[in-house]
Length: 257
Image 1 (tube, rainbow, N blue to C red):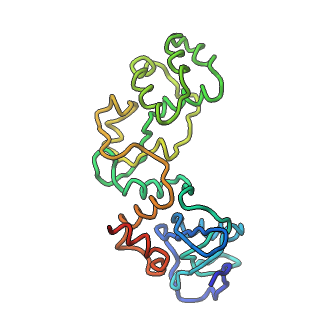
Image 2: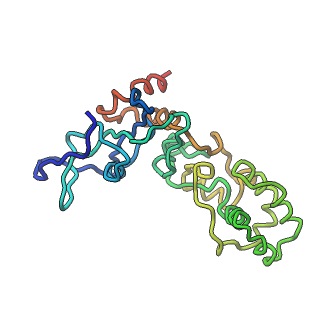
Image 3: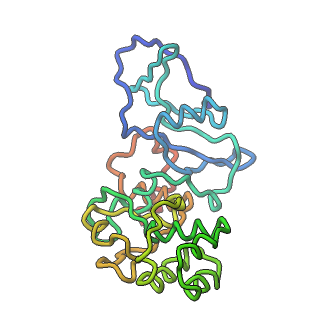
């Protein structure tokens, strides 16, 4: 039954959720006749969504108690977003836990356990992208970057799809300049990959085409909900909370094919 957060006795002898406790987020069509998984979020993010009236609780963890000074409730196990959405068009928010799910909890260069996030397009080049995006071409001119290099940077719109190739082409010249004082574009789905510390250090400030590592899997992309649910099941199937299973049966069958 759909409900808001329920108050419970704060003295209940129950353990609290930990940093690995996740909440399954469901979307729905406009008529609420179909619920489908969108993503997973940390339990405290789920409570925030409910308090902001952006979601309602569908199921609770019966054995996990959340206590505050004024309130005690069971940790939400499954929530439903109030706003209807289409699963094919839903892109989960970028976060480190979600990145690990997208990348199957593997370093995208060697397949080992990842401990860091790598800028697929080097961070220094995203600073240049930010300069151009903000229309501050004079900064590049003031740094005495050759006009033909600036022309190459401006000859086509810089997107995440072409930035890596352009960076590789201009890298030998541009790496001589210091862009560290300029803001970089924030990490996002299309420029972040999970990486181990060793591969991240090997790649360093280089584009993938000139680095000492090779991309073993697909280039970074913005996943939709079906990708994320399938990947989550692939990586964490042994640890899926039983309370989620009724909402994941269809996705589980797809992931096991």
